[in-house]
Image: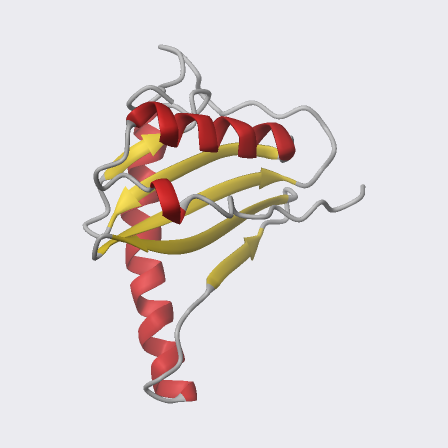
Length: 144
């Protein structure tokens, strides 16, 4: 199957959570999702790992799990990069590809001195994909 690379929303930082209208953030995310049909989930979390928004098809417990695990992973990757490349090196994004042909992409944005981390889960297999154990329906976060 052909691999389609996800491009983070260019205006995400301009309307990030701090002080932005929820509808403005939702509009940006929905437009971005329509341009990236291989995205099967996302979580926007604050720097404490608390999900602020998540994909409507993604169960809330999975949003919590991705946030908790990837915050720690991202912080360790930043520390490692700074030690390997020098103090001025900044982590732009992380990409993790699984054997099941999903990809997890992590990026950051800063708005009003608050950092947000965007975690994107992409289906690279070309086959239909479902979140495991979808009982209870997917969450939507705040208006997602």
